[in-house]
Length: 180
Length: 110
Image 1 (cartoon, rainbow over the protein chains, first blue to last red):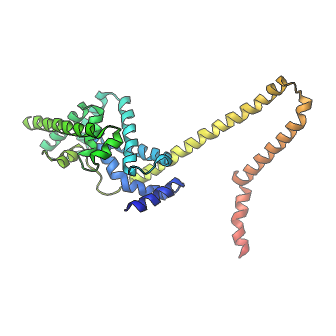
Image 2 (cartoon, each protein chain N blue to C red):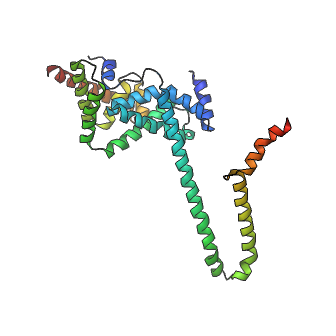
């Protein structure tokens, strides 16, 4: 879908058109859900936060000025929701959920891949918030460094350094998992 | 395993195609939030309205107006309020007389 069509849908959604907003949800749900899945490590929590972020976007769509893409705008909202939710949860709860989620959803994958996944999640949980979010945005190549900087409200150089350092830590975690 | 995409896939994959169930949940949540916001605004308006009505008498008393002087004003306000309630009830109420009569109009034109 081109930018003109997206702008038309945004205009309709601002006027209260639910079906236009539904099409915008379809256009951007993959990127937003992927970001939140990587950052939370839990698909159910991620989708819950993504739904909240989209619902909030509907309320604040009039604030979207078009200087960035709508996808960036929604991810900015999602990032704020994730940060708020994370502060409300204890670290221990997150880890327990990650283990439970892993055992529930990844039973058909090889054990070594499951171990890698677990090691990565643990490594992600130990990263600072901004670094974790920068990695979640940029690793899957859904977002450029510039877009990630906009979403996180950080300078471009900081985001690049977060991604480089975070990637190194994740790779180190995978190395440890391989030894085990 | 150093590939960024592989790391990303291990951390959590994007849904392959747009999920209609997700869209439905988003729209349901959006509608629910809108309903709650509307209810909050209505409750706020009701509270403000009754607070203002309650303030009329002490303010009037402070300004030196008694009930005899206020009576015509209160009578007009009461009639207007009653007319408003009746109009809202006619349009949106449980029987919605006006809405039903409008629905019948196209049938009468045939």
